[in-house]
Image 1 (tube, one colour):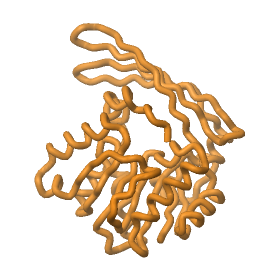
Image 2 (cartoon, helix red, strand yellow):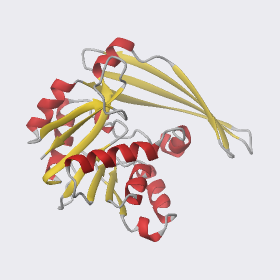
Image 3 (spheres, helix red, strand yellow):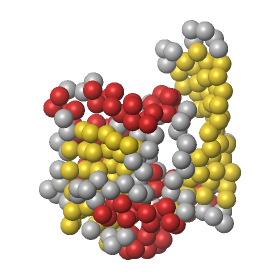
Length: 257
């Protein structure tokens, strides 16, 4: 895991991703959980971020425990929880932890890792450790569902420089995203350059974060799952459920204990 990332990013995380359809993604995950583990009630989310997926899953009746190593992300998740109706907030809890090493001393019906948490596990050791965390927290028959950058598409299309502009009532933000491929190691180093203007003072703040993102292939995922004592249930294109192809940037996999 790349410690130290999201330290500044977290302040603007929800603004940058406000166009992400968390409700639809959570419904997609909910249906997969119920497909393979119909009686599921307890869910562990590795890398819960600001808690938006967890909130929607709780609204569907699941009890979600979220962990994240970013205290800034967790502060936002806790604030979101406190603003929810009691019957939803009571189904949520958030705590600090590293997805590779945390052991909560309890088990769950499902473990999820979304928004490419698995791609942040750049080394084989980190991938194996995170899968073992999932396996150790699963009840028999429980499922681990995760998404990731899909290797064939990353190699075919290659990430390119992008610019994203967003704003709210407080700030205007320009984000420059510059990727550098490392094909031998199967990862992309992504540089995020932020230009943030405070609308009240007109002051401009700049900062940069670098994230390493591993792209994964389904045959290696089968081996990683097997090493963790999980059987492969399904691979697919994220949000469609169809087979991943050369135009699939984000894929998902499911392992079952």
